[in-house]
Length: 406
Length: 147
Image 1 (cartoon, rainbow over the protein chains, first blue to last red):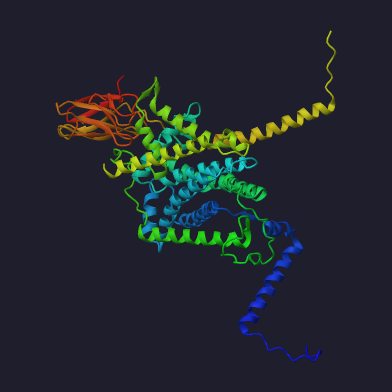
Image 2: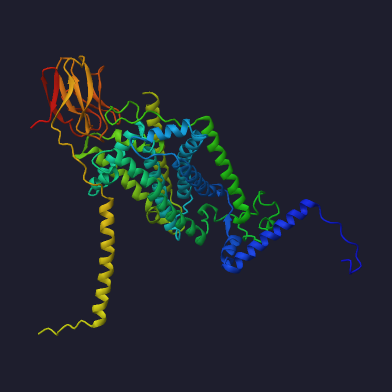
């Protein structure tokens, strides 16, 4: 500039110089990877991915919240592995050691226990919202199927993880759970022996549940969650039928700055009734939701830390007031309702058969809801969904009430 | 007369290759599946155990005892009789207990109740409890499986 005869600009302040230097370094790092790997497609996907904006947009956050809670589970689970011993002689004592002797061990275990409950709750909300917004309409049937399978997998995590502290509650809940598996027609006895590692719940069961909990189920989760997210990326997010008539504006062109396309910035109200860029607009909102969830998990863990109960004694009677985790309570209460025999068939078999049928129906909802396949909303499907939810909530409430007034 | 079927070398090699792949997978999967199946444990062949000392159990009280690798329940009924049953509920395998106020055997898991003969009174259990024989030999209460 001096050569052009212009006065020299004053040097930028030190913090600005640091920021410029950091940006240049990041740019060089980006260039390094771009030269070696074809990352253009990924960057394009991020730049052009949009999220529909309508009055139900809030429900889109629950998938991300579920994923964030799974992340918390993975991190806290890896920490617990450092001290946990998977044997009937050592499991209870190792958890007690974690909670009483290891620095912040109580916090890590409490976070794992609370997030285990919240991840199921979050997945339930995600599943219910997807159901009522009919996001399973073609061409997203398989996304729904992978989501329902993921939900079952998360329940499997809950069931297998529940036994690991080897306390009385867990022991008897597992006895009931494996017995239920044993009543599945045809493969039941084989499944039960496989799960128990023998004829009854014992040391071998604990080893197997540990193996399922930390190796088999996470591998399944990785594959299914990867497929689920990939399908969403390929097909984009579903727009509910009810918002189809809303004023629609074309998605704003996302620039490298992303949020600059919007007058109100990344955290401001989204433009019109159309769509917002996923990155950074929706992503930053997602981050906020994840942070709130992490805060909630920490608060719950600090104010209501997980308890350990009493060590399991296979030769003690089942204690009064025994109940499984809240998300299995509706099934627990259903099993209580059925008499010994229904039309000559054992009542438990009928109850378990009906529950299994409900699971299959949930899996094939996209093909059963024929009006939705043609872009129409059916009051009957909505009513059935509400009735199913009311049954689960009602049975859970009754079981909780009976448990509290025992 | 049927025309003679000629198996070409290409088709033969295709069969051989496909068969080889199936055999390879089978040979890999079979040991894996057998590995996953729990090894045969030492099944308890106990047919009789000492469940208690005579006089140990008060009237209208019960005790859980080990019968091999499963729990049993010994009752001293209000009428003064000694009775024993398998303590495994016939509904979903929980361990039953004695309710001395109602004088019934009760399962806490799903609220099943049995009378003092092990018969189902109420709740979901589909079958009665397995009954054992009780004999007092000297100062020992011996419980055995019926022959």
